[in-house]
Image 1 (spheres, rainbow, N blue to C red):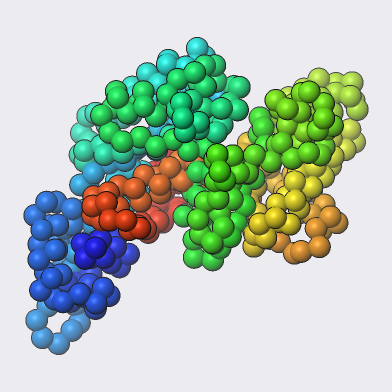
Image 2: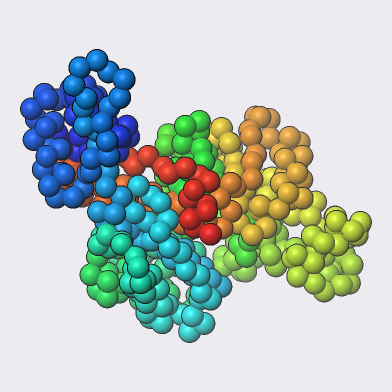
Length: 394
């Protein structure tokens, strides 16, 4: 426990002297010196200079050694796979993007493993040893089988133990989490951690889903399905058989809803970007389409406000980040929700889930390395600067 306290102080306040660590933790200077010496000897912390401006002897200051280890964050989607390797401070070292293997199943496992391994073996790289990987998935991980449920866009992903298969090939610990949950954690970690411990992240794209951060912690529910707002029982008929597989709200508030509604109103067939372009050009049917979809998203958001009482709602996903949609949702929320809630656009866009995966990986890694399995121990890793994270990821 003393070691975890020391590493938390260095991670949070570094560069920091041993005397300052002792003051922050309440441990004796001798205990701190012994722990820091051991951590330095093992390569986990490093000397980065000396204190300046103080009367008397200068003190050596320490920080976490960024290259001591590497973690992998993966965002697995129905169309793309993103892989980012990060150092111990959360800085993105390398990112790779590929189209998701169309055969799905074990082929996706092979693809993820190859992308991680090839990224870690880049020439002229000085990456630390890969220690852990977190995989964001567009569905709900089944704790019993390891399969991913409610992910129809990736064939056979529900028929394999995703984490176990990747873990066996990589030889490191692997965690699997819903991608929207990771996006919520990423927004909280990088963009809102200092101001907002109660937020909802709503992703609107091919589908619609939400990640709920309550009291600074992710709300998962009994089976990991908290936030599956596509299945809220309004929008389309919730008793229709299709609503059991797609979700009543998702049927009227995502990609297919936009395309189909615009076609029914205008007689024209186009994709989602085409509808947004048409609305911008003054097409009344396109504007009405976006109005109707925004109204349904606002209803879903208002339901979440009534249940979890967040201080802010963040819209993300390929559709959710569009300014035209954001303005409409903000307008309709005022009309259907009596509580004033800030509604904002994601600052991380398509890198939100990668950021969340990095935060989860680093927290698990620091806790397992430095708290050594102490029950209830948890080490929070301060986020990197948001601008530098986005620059590294891109």
